[in-house]
Structures are given as structure tokens and as C-alpha cells.
Amino acid sequence: AALPRFYHENVIDHYNNPRNVGSFDKNDPTVGTGLVGAPACGDVMKLQIKVDDKTGQIVDACFKTFGCGSAIASSSVATEWVKGKPMQEVLSIKNTEIAKHLSLPPVKLHCSMLAEDAIKAAIKDYEAKRTKPSASPEASQ
Ligand code: FES
Ligand code: FES
Image (cartoon, rainbow, N blue to C red; front, side, top):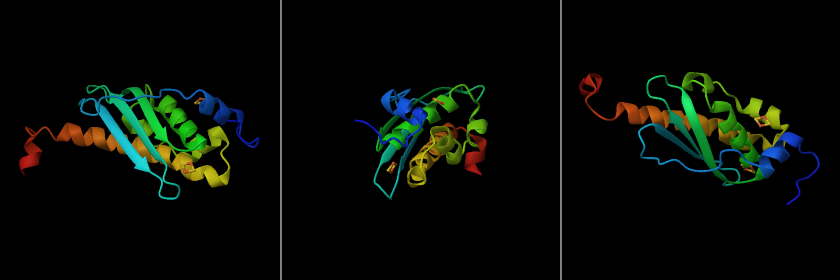
């Protein structure tokens, strides 16, 4: 389907050829899963990261987005940007940077917000998993 002309070529490229579409096993201890929804439109985005336990580096990322073209393009960009980066660094990725990269119009800003939220949720999930497997002395205090 053709997109309206006000979309920048980056969004059309990521819309037509989304990068890193797919799923990791969410039970894999090295995988963090972020699942977020946009109340405004009902679109849903799942973004997953695979983390090197030793370095905290994100070695791989993928997504599945049930949403508009801008949400798909935003998740595609987000997975590109997080790969190969330390988790701490990607926490500072702002939806406004994604929106700027894709030249999203104001009404589509919430689509890029989904991507920012999904990155944060994926990291949170990964960290929660890491601290869960008991044996941690702090947990009993
Ligand atoms: Fe793909 Fe910039 S055009 S991340
Ligand atoms: Fe809601 Fe794009 S219209 S995520």
C-alpha cells in the first residue's frame, strides 16, 4: 500500500523493508521482552533483545508490531539502534530521536513513543529475570 507523500524516505524504507522482524524465545534467560500498547489507537509492539550476560551488551534484537506503518518503522529503527550497544546506553534513546530520523508528523509521535517504551520494557524484563533465580543473597534480606 502506498503511503502518503509527507512521509520521509526513511519511513518508507523501514515500512517496506522492516529490519529484524521476528521473535526470540521469551523464556531464554538472555532474552528481554518488552510488550507495550498504545491506548490511543490500540496498536501493540513487541520488542526483544538478546543480551551478553557478561558485558551487558545487546547482541541481537527483533520485533513484532501489530500497528500502523509508523509504529512498524519505529520498531525497525529501534532494533537497528540497540544492536551492539550496552543496555545502559540504549536507555537514553528518545522517541523524539526516532521520530526525527523518520521525519514522523506530529500525529504519529505516539508511534515512536511505543518504540522507546518497548526498549525500556525489554531491558526491565531482562533485568528482572536476572535477579529472579533466587540464590541472590540480597533477595532474602
Ligand atoms: Fe534505518 Fe536509519 S534508515 S536506522
Ligand atoms: Fe498508533 Fe501508530 S497510529 S502506533
